[in-house]
Length: 135
Image (cartoon, rainbow, N blue to C red):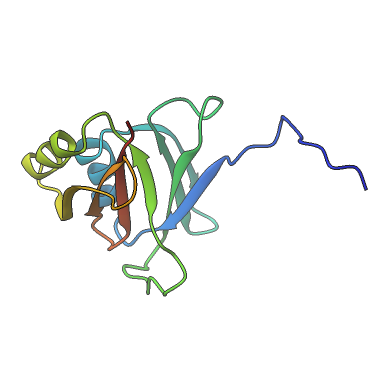
């Protein structure tokens, strides 16, 4: 079997189920700084998808928020860990997130044994977001 890399392969998006689409869009746009790229309404199927990102879908991996009509909460389970976002300055990003009303759960700190500074934020549905400042 030949071992090769398919250069057209890439991660397209990460999907999160959310209990309140408006609240989640507000968090990821106003607090985190993403922009809404597109929304896909499926009223007959009783769901709405909203895709958000820092750049266009053709350029990077994006976040898909899925709202299933009438479902306001989900159990997060113990298999999902977090979403990671690269930032220029972790402390400044935490300060900005707090100023915008976001919940910083772990303040910016040097990751032991590395040169990365990390912090954690929690979104309105309880999902963890790791902020990473690389040297």
